[in-house]
Image 1 (tube, one colour):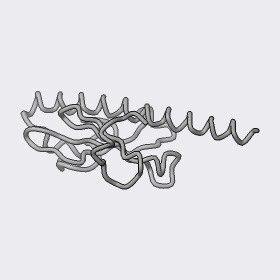
Image 2 (image 1 turned 90 degrees about the horizontal axis):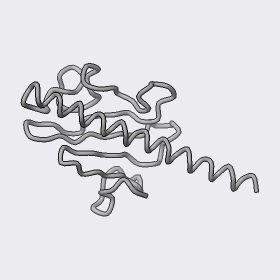
Image 3 (image 1 turned 90 degrees about the vertical axis):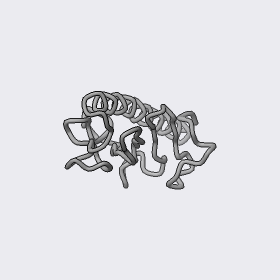
Length: 130
């Protein structure tokens, strides 16, 4: 009986961590839009002026939750150019969300969750809903 409650609690924590990462991605997307308004491009928003990788600290935080306590996801720019971007929240290897699959959001608002943890977003996974 206690095992069942423990697994229910773990599922709840996993969903809560995923929701934090989803909220972080929405904030990250807003930051990317602000950058576009200033620079007319989504490029060079990653650390060191790169187009991909962890966001530059002046653009957005690099981990979720945003308060920096006990991070569960690394935030990253997967692709960026003059007309669009794709950003991701990737579970930290060995962390509490490891194996839960990455979350993704693009400049068109399309959301994805690699629910089967295959490393890619399948057509059926273009949703944040379980």
